[in-house]
Length: 285
Image (cartoon, rainbow, N blue to C red; front, side, top):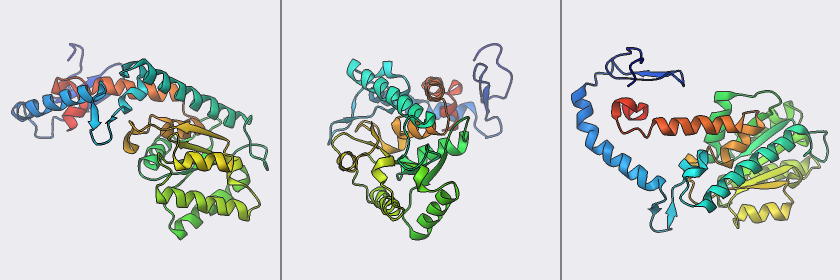
């Protein structure tokens, strides 16, 4: 640790640039305890390095694990992947800009005023975490999350949407890698039915985030969705928050996407330090 690091305790981490600190001095963890986990932690770091370098993590499906590259595309194992990531981020920013500026608007309202995010698991928890943690900013929109098709819960969701101006000014964002996840598909179909009852068309005010060639990809084309953003098989749902899955809803709520990615990249760097006493994630682990 740097000489100017304040004395926060024997087991402490401090980053002056980030203005963040972690003090575990009262957690009954001593140097001997740290020494016992050094070997397994070293093995974990080595495994992480292999995965983040493009090693196959799922031999059955020949898939990599690449969420680490989403916030630092230059670390991707090929120029093609780097380009794909950068292009997707650009599409997220452009599509969200058009929504927020009113350039992209619903057929029966002057502009979109709120968003319903349809997804489950990481496709819902990631965006909802960002929304709850950072809230709306500037011209950002109100977000609602449809992650459960329980009738009572869905009725409450629709009531909340109605209280904010109704479906006519609501953008629906459907998130599913395969498009076959039952809960997400049911939520989308319930919303489609609600739009139909209101004399509206879901497709005319919806955007899909999905894999190319998926069931949702096909449905979005058939229903005339306003746009589509990509998901990839090398990004798992629970680690997708810095892909379009999390970035597009975040941009719609007014979050600066570049700042979010920069912060994530900075924390990635902090947590790849192999000295346990200088790694906040290792200390917490």
